[in-house]
Image (cartoon, rainbow, N blue to C red):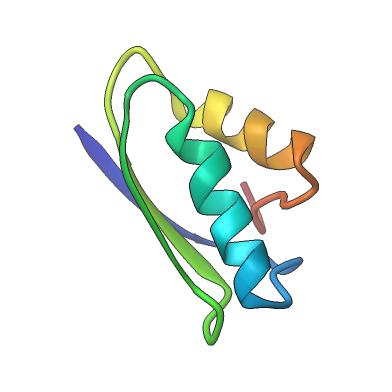
Length: 69
């Protein structure tokens, strides 16, 4: 299992954080997702079959790409 914390510059409100949390939770293998509006950071814990690349692809798809992915 891996945990990664990353910045998402497009986060502008609590709704943005909830959207990211809800979308990432749909990926098989994502164990938990939590976000902070104040820091614009998301922490995701995941394991196979999902990969970091798949998480990044989902974030790009929903217009919340991670900074320096």
